[in-house]
Image 1 (cartoon, one colour):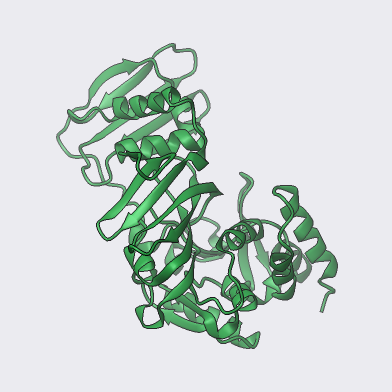
Image 2: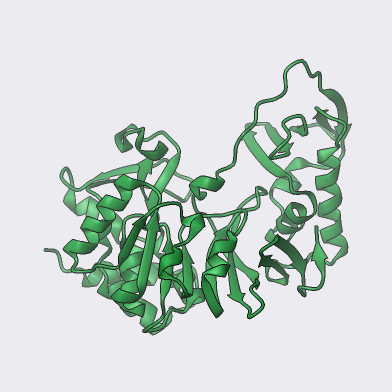
Length: 378
């Protein structure tokens, strides 16, 4: 077996090159729980705006091991298993998360020995093993929706001598039979925080989850459960995770026999698409809309759409050399104008950063707020 020391040293150094030095106990966990024991023989190295790279342990074990101990995410499933990884093309549906992001979320979660931890999304089992190291094996419950992934994770954990409580099911439901929990660690992205996670936590419990709004890149959300049965907290940093399967966005088709109205807009869609995190949170909270984009040489397209009404949609096209941009609207609801108005509301607020925004989650749903929970927006 290759000496992992130099590989671990390099991985830790690369993580700390893009963030502050890790807490010592998180670093010890990363060094004590070998990532390669939880990565399948074939995986895809992704990230950094480059094409996916196939790594195959049997074909090139040295290359495979070297990439396992980099700071990047490794995709371990495409299209819920319907597409082979060797095809290199498909929707990413499971992965071994990037170690830098894992370290970020574990520090925000702050699991301590004896804490009862619920993990949403077992994946390869690596983060479940890290949680066993940090909180104690009997205290960890991990739930995975995909039976084949759950089976592989259980095998990985058992071979490492670990047996946390594993459940196959929808993570949105939590695991009521193992509650109450002190910590909830989420390895997929949500747009709506399931209240089950709040209801199954003790007062003072911490929930850390990737959060997506449908407007640009995602965020990390840290919530603390209050004695009144609600949870509240702020958005903390960037995160890019696959959506929880029960909350995957549905791309609705354009309605038939609807002729879009054509006009122009002076607002550059690239400005909206590339807006800072605070602006994206403002747009999402005030409009509830989603934004999809496609960039091509000399052309940029931005679709604004409702997630529930296919007719509420607009397309904005930027073309090089033009001072105004083409706008096509499919309904009386002027969704592009709503997005633009929300963006400039963020400007009027002084262009606040991401961490000035937060979320409160209760039995009746979730509410976005700005600066304080009493200042609800949206």
